[in-house]
Length: 539
Ligand SMILES: *[C@@H]1O[C@H](CO)[C@@H](O)[C@H](O)[C@H]1NC(C)=O
Ligand SMILES: *[C@@H]1O[C@H](CO)[C@@H](O)[C@H](O)[C@H]1NC(C)=O
Image (cartoon, rainbow, N blue to C red; front, side, top):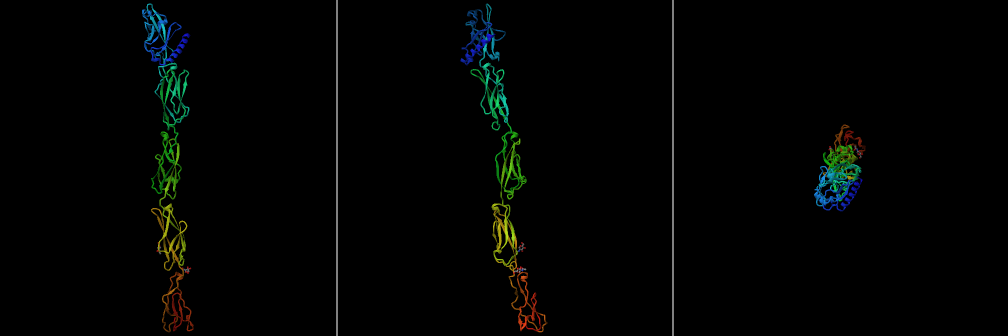
């Protein structure tokens, strides 16, 4: 037995050596090389590769067992099998050579067995003679490694850590020894390495090792080819495709299309006006990529003025914008994905001014009544005008009507002095209705008016005037003392006391006697009375 094993080992080495010289063993049938030896029991043994062509010579058995060639024909030599096994070889009766009779497939005969031995017998008659011999079938690399499946499928989440391992199916091969699977290769790729594990029985399998994290948003699937290679000469290989579906993880937040959305909108735009549509996208999948919108912190006024559609991102007006209250509005908006990852953006609304405010006229001071002797240019009042609109909409011009002895003189910003332009005469016109008109430069312009009532104060500037230059009266003699002779009348257009006339007689002498001894006048009424009877007086 020991010798047998020893010899087998030598045969192995020799066969390998021989295969090294003639790589395509299965390709030729005539040129071959068979090793023969006697076993410990005296049997003859032939070692030769499987899959030799029919008719190929295995060895010369006649020579090997010491038979004369002629004996073969006379003895009717033939090859027999033990039991009912197939007859794999024949004998050439002319030469004594053993030749291949059937296809010899080592894998079919012996499977994974380390040595594949077929026992056969050479039988001769007259007399009966029996020689056992052994066919030792050598493996050739006639099988390729193969995988159970044609496709290996993995689902790996993109959040999976580097170093994670995935077991790969072992490749199988019918050939044995070095002709069986010796190594695995993975085509070069960005994410995975191959780790080959050798088991206790010497067989090998691969593990896929994640070497660089996956990113579904960059690559949704990875296809790799795993190749198993045997140790034959030349080597044979088998492949399997590895198909990796990268599953989503919520590793991306929504991203707004703009960091700031700038829009301008006229003030007083109607409710329901679309301000702007904000939009954010999230490259994650499904729920992880579903974006909804909401406002960040808003003031109470803004909450009443704006609405944001959570799904469409449309911002609309729910109230009115007033440029005079706020000329620029900032709204923080937020986009959130299904898992709550959020990002912010800002909407900046420039409110465009409309000419929606009329000028306001305010009388800051008024010095009335105005004395009628006031000199031209006297300041009688100070007017202030204001307009809440901006720029041209807030530029105001002020005027008063023509044909009055007053004018507006522009003073410092938005202030005007109302001054007299001529002499006043209370007795002609005692009050004025001044209408101030203020108009802005908007389009269309807005204007407003204000009436001021100016009164003129009296100055005693008119002397009384008698209705007649001379009054002539006739008095009868012996009139009663105290009777009225005549009455005079004078008028004065001035006001009240300044226009109240008091009558008196100028002191003068009549024939040496004072006038007052003859006549008297009623100061209030102007009625002249006689103090004595029968007096002739010439006034
Ligand atoms: C001034 O206006 C008032 C009321 O507007 C009116 O009653 C008055 O008669 C007017 N006076 C003059 C002098 O026009
Ligand atoms: C009369 O005239 C004087 C100035 O001449 C003035 O001060 C006064 O107020 C006037 N009286 C009235 C009742 O207008």
